[in-house]
Image (cartoon, rainbow, N blue to C red; front, side):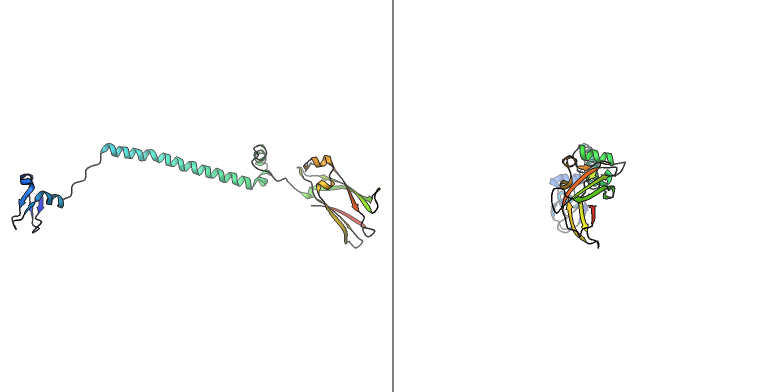
Length: 225
């Protein structure tokens, strides 16, 4: 072992026997300065770090090993929940399109109706609503009034909402001289109004009363909106 004189900085060897005498006090052979060789030895060579306790090291390693599966499980569960929420949101936004497909239609319909999770917009195709017959004549009980009778049918394979009717009359030049929109509650009977949608293949009788626009009206049209 070596120690160093703090006065002249001379280094020289010492042994344990010398350090044990006089509490480690020695005299420098060069400058004669008396100093504590043990303190100079400790100051020059720091204390060797103590080794880790084996039991503590094992305990720390086991703790890290046990926490890792928990963290992985937490991340996996979070990703699964986020994916499920994203899937439900996509189904909700595309519910009408999915309900029209053969694969997902029954599932989406059951979820929306049975679980009251969402409301599906009714299918609608005005081209599948046909005007079967129509007739315009003077009102038998009122002057300057007309009666309009018509029959419409839903030829689609699905129920759909009742349309808004536009009754228009035009003159010989094709110019519209009178027109009026009728909502379902204005032209449906009580029995038909109790049914929310037009069922396929069932004729719907329509009876309307209109003011007579005069002799200029020679053409009659009925359109669906």
